[in-house]
Image (cartoon, rainbow, N blue to C red; front, side, top):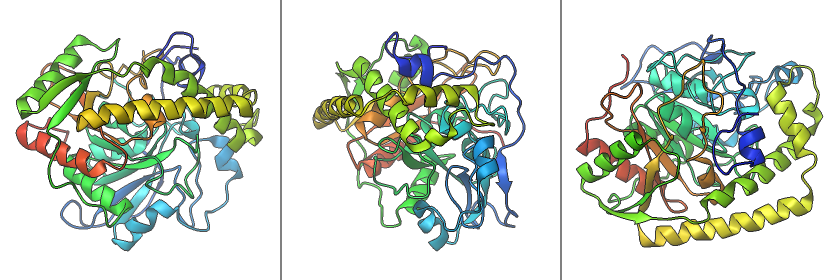
Length: 404
């Protein structure tokens, strides 16, 4: 299977975070289920798009999989993360398309269709929260809710030139959310700008607030394999804002992929072993299930030890700077006809292993087919700091425009 980044030979890159080597992707719909839209848009009733991995009372959850759809019954209650959406009186405009079982980071789905990227229709929308990102980018929703296990909020945000926030692991409840790897899964908001993500975060946690000041010292993280042109626009953005920038290294970066591999495959199998070889399950998902059944409890325990060491390394780096900065993607999003092998999760998945929050936002990138995406990483429960910093960046820079 194609390599999508990280250390050579890792099963995670070669078998799990891989994408189908398709030369043809059927672009159909953003929506799995659509509800009557409200009369008011921005400035009126808040419109929310919900990834179809999140339960809504009275609606089936497909998780983007024909086998799950065909077995599904109506959800009897909302996922816990929707409580703030309901109490705020926001209007859920629909449940959005995703990649099968939240797996592929490309945003492709051969059964439900692949939403067209409104910024660059010839390029992938990113996944797995593809539909929510596209609904926001093309103006059909004000807030999109997605899940992020290895980059599934940040990657589609980057591909569609919007803002996406991966929350601290455990901060937003995941009861009623389709699990991929429960010890990594998070729920987070997407919006056209950072202010919209702030609104989305308040829907998820009504008492949450933005920090009183942005970051002052930024740790610049450089990972091998990134397009130099992307690194240049990230550096230009940070310096234009006026941050104090320090170079930071994370020596354990390359070792994160084996632990991610073990945890994702092992937890996938434990959660969904009944789907192995089921009618309607795609080849990539079935291959992941098959590999996951051979992950032992001892291997999972060892991966958790490695995870703890990595969390300590990231925490130590964040003791020296306020936030870390790096791109979200190693290059511009790939074409729909040539995305196999692109390392989509190369710069995102290690922060899922660390459990820390991260925000992705577009920055000025003249000549790029899609604006480059800056990723800021904060300490545990540092979403307020990340959003304050993102707001400061948007005030200082011209935010790249989106289609009307």
